[in-house]
Structures are given as structure tokens and as C-alpha cells.
Image 1 (cartoon, rainbow, N blue to C red):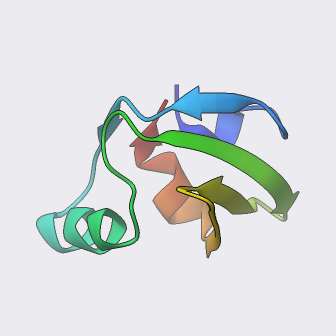
Image 2: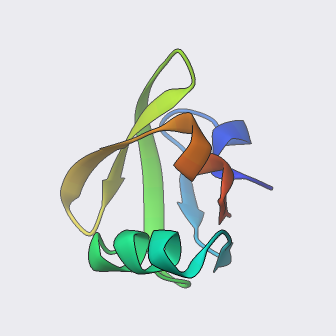
Length: 69
């Protein structure tokens, strides 16, 4: 399921990243790689703040849809 459907506070594992190669590389540089644990901290208008690798990152809804957990 896409990250946008995950519940706030629930830890998930990234299964795969979709999208264009430049989008995948951008997310990979931020630590969004298959097998990484990710938790949604907050959601505002579809945009999400996530905790990944002990860092908080804000990503847009468009990018969150490309992350499958």
C-alpha cells in the first residue's frame, strides 16, 4: 500500500519506491530505501512528516504516493 494510507505512529517497512529515476534517486539520498523502517509523525493536507533513520523529513503527497510500504 502507498505510504499515504499508513496510520500515524505506526512503523512500516518500505517495500519499493516508484516514480521517475530522478525522483527515486532523490528519495534514496534522503534514506528512503527498500527495507528501511518509516513512521508517519504527522499529516497535513496530504503532505506527511515522517521519521526515517532517526531523522524527520517532510515530503509531499505526490512523493508519499510513490513509496510502497
